[in-house]
Image (tube, rainbow, N blue to C red):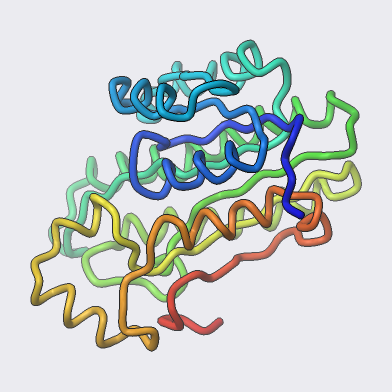
Length: 247
């Protein structure tokens, strides 16, 4: 079950946190994995740790010229593309009344526009493969479901990702290609490690499970959606948040 032997995958934001966890899970299941991100040293270290069936394809998602070439670069290394995981993202938090235009633009560009560009290019490749198999997994956020003070830009991007994924799912379902989102809650990553102990304790109290999740929790969901067993699920958002948002 959940065997990805012979499949190929591209994971963005694979240099740490959730992306690394997903890359490890897909690789362990037998997939050949292309690791993408900005931190090349971290990508190289992960590739060395994984061993065979792994390639490094660096990309700065804030640079449209690089984004436009990423799928082709990954296919050149992998031979073809079966699975795309759009995980990379960034935050530039601020309250609405004082948010700068560039904070809005930068977050939308990396978290939503780049995901659109990669979905577009990946779906083209998957259709041309004529294999009747394709998996697109977009990592959204609980913030994109019910909003979060100070994250109007981030919530807009992650909510937009959910709507975009539903539209894509309807367009490619007849080709055997699925498109789904995962909406993590609070996960133990470098992004949440900036919170102090008091903040972490307060947030944990709002979560029915009374704890933050781990990258492994998200990776398990991604592995399921990437597998043959997840082939009849499309246009959905898998909420992995310890009960924080029950949708």
